[in-house]
Length: 311
Image 1: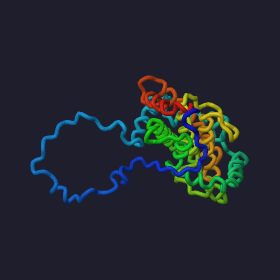
Image 2: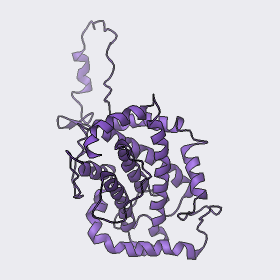
Image 3: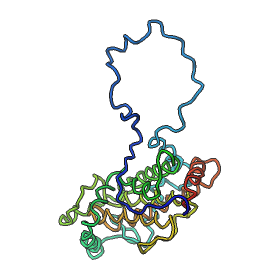
């Protein structure tokens, strides 16, 4: 990892609002009164030529992610839809519990099966004092992104392709997570056992799977792909130390997911399902990124150049 160094101090405060220009957010205020516009308009407007130039290819990154989401959906080789295919895989896997799906191989149908999920959260709550700042910081999308950019020392203005990969991963993760949440409609932990008393308010979405877990493993996964590491590499089990950038990325994703459990807004099974779903998505993205002519292929090549000294 010569050249660029990892910053493993995760206590970061980064401003990733890239929409601001010259100290003012674009479109945030009027430049003159609408009434005055007619006074500025020429009496005889000139002829306007058809523009030869196109809009900048580097237009709003957050909005551009939708084109990649479309490629992920349409060109990903899904049997049905991404959500329905991943649901089928969750239904048949035997590694983690599945709520509100009586026919699933690991279905939770009894009190004895569900109680350990709540007991786990009560134990995890003992770590709230140590993790409180992280939990609050990572509650927002931009706050969480700052942990990856800070750890890898990515500059969104310079490492544009790597940052774009992160935004795409987050958007795909959100799409898949919300689709699955709508299927399972699992109640949040505090709705089941109020004394869990979360230290933050969770969003108005069902609990299963954890969107934070899914998106975190997606972001770490696409960055690993840019480093030439398959996302199915086993996660590290100890910390510290880590032996590679890939392990550091895996650890960060797992820690962000765990923080949601410590906060009391997600069950352990939510995080497990989120990680599982992320790996299904990453397998598809890896195929798209190694297929000539796809947008993912071109973007991953450029991101790899930016991250070459971290591999």
